[in-house]
Image (cartoon, rainbow, N blue to C red; front, top):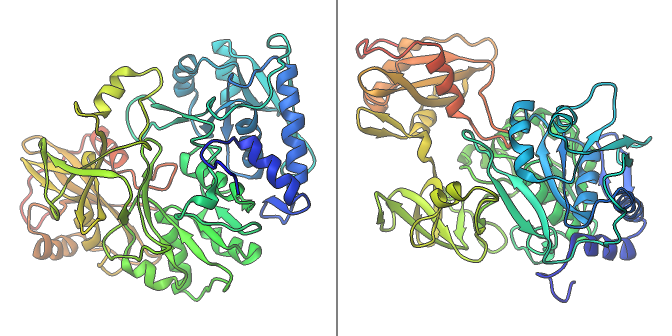
Length: 512
């Protein structure tokens, strides 16, 4: 183990394991191809040399789109070992990129060479950002980097522990993207061997069902590699394929967002069974229904963390699961409602402070000022409550439905709706209402072949939730909108309802 785990770099981690586990695999893809530590080390060395020859220094900022797949994982490692990396979601539209690129002060953008330029290449050309071309080689991992000369060749080596290591975009669901900068030693250089929330032994295999453009995808990859583990980054994030991937790769770890864990639980309820070697499933930042845990015999460890705060609460490895909670609190935390610190068992905004909390958003002092209280606590925007040192996660402040001054929790509506026969998924949100401001509305996904009686469902919900919380508008969708990390996007449903110009009318207790 590293003598000083908190003060190293990603390049040092790759150097170490390339020496100790040279012929062992570090990356895999769903087709069965493998990349060894020795091959990864060579790819990092050659790519870093190519960047330096083009004039890119160790603290220069270099952006790249991160579509799902093993080559994105390899590129992320290369950039993490060579420059200040700026990983971006592959689906980021060009208008958002055109707004973002000038803020980043990029030295270059790495773009996939192909017959059609990527949206990043098009945006970079418009903004005058130099493009470095990624030219894939024969296997799913390796590539070459080349392009026009950016500046004089750089003699800089690998980034140091205190150099900026990564800039992560955290746009959420509204507003312009926020940018969080982490130093090499804080992000890439932290050894997962010291992380009780994700212990990995050398050679353990982890499947990461997350984009490498998201903080959680990067963090899971880094934790696995820091301990000499092997990571599989599937080329699609389709949760329905995770059971076949688990059968093919026989992993020790699975990381999945909560919605994907629910999909895997449905497969288990249908007869699928994980291999005995699957040790743990990790999820994060949303409550999992007890039925999901019961369907999967493999231990599921929940947690609550963010790019801005680091780990806040977790369970597993000495911290048992407590129904209704995401884990035991590991940070300085308080619950606040209307400016008052709330006692145990009451709901309010989760606020966090301490050494893990970021210092502020890059190039956005106004957003930083809004994110922190006057006494230095970070406002998460999440609702929660505390009991005996455990944290319950109760949704987003922005998700609360404000119906004539009444604050209605959409998750309460959703839990009730999922009990109705034939409903496999549900989302409640605040639709516009001329008099009340907002009115509870909902969207549901039905099991194949099921019929649906909206009025009967509404009457049933009134009996359980009361007339104010029972939605009067219930739409049937093929799937619910979700963010890139799998979280339900109620704001997109509300925006669609607003643009449709169909506000919920006060039609009486039996109307939908």
